[in-house]
Image 1 (cartoon, rainbow, N blue to C red):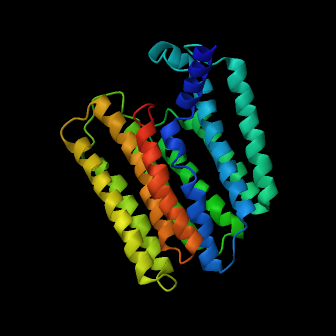
Image 2: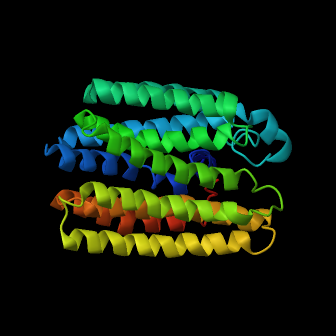
Length: 308
């Protein structure tokens, strides 16, 4: 009995890409606290928790749907995946898919109209990726990147998108970062020469942070900027090392897959930096939690479960 439970638990962890789960809450947190400081409004802790749970529901929905959509392909090329290996049944997985969809929409509805609309669009983007655009080397990464951008916007929607232009630019930066990482992931099953494309994640990573600093420069203290910049430098070093590995000749599948995992985890540095910029104690604390708790958890679980 214990062995069966462990097999099922491992199956669920494989489906939801456990290491990546810890990179999800930072997107809406950063969006919400940036909206709070720009609009000079406070955030309801209950609404914030509901929003994060809704985003996590969307994330799990997307990955469960992904495994269902990929079943035939996995049966041939990756029979060790939870569905082909029968670690999980179709009935269990389909119930979980419906549960995450309903839970995400109900939580979003409870938060407010703007959040509900944003979350509904996010569900549509996730489904568009899984069911239509996944095989396209351009549309796929762009759609996946938009999912991360909309996760950030969902946080801003908590306060009805104050200064929407700034949030669109920041969401575009996050979209571009994750789209470039997804593009790299598209080539993790082959020996591939990435060339200059390996430089894009670092460019978008630093560029998004620079836009945030410029947009908040009148509202943040020198201490906040120093703390956030130190985090960005740390994340930049990690991404630069990933970039070097990808550009060291033709990258092997094993190297590319490991590097993609590191690049996904590195998004935590950007999320933490954006929170550390916010001149509010709770935002600063959440930035430290994301950096000192979520990142190590993502890194450690990444040794046990693949992030891509």
